[in-house]
Length: 109
Image (cartoon, rainbow, N blue to C red):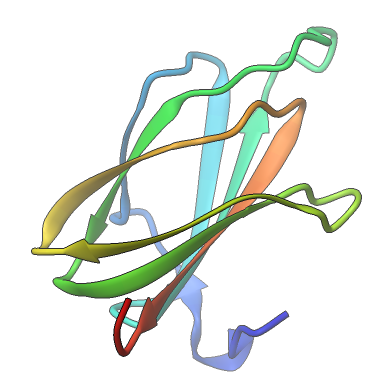
């Protein structure tokens, strides 16, 4: 919800780092405007909740980041930040087996 998916494309550049092994990250983006990021654990037998730090290459600006549970649609974490450009590291809330991160540029924080 809230994405203009027609303008978004697969993006292999935005995701720059992560502290969790066995995790895949898929990004759709409209660079500088909106990023839909799907984080998924590859070991579905592991039932423990996990969290980690993930890096994303973003242009300078003000942003809103929302971590969502893709099953329930519940917001697990929300934050606003101002970024000077380059890599921005964000800490995920605990999740298993997957979580969605929605990053949108805002006019101000």
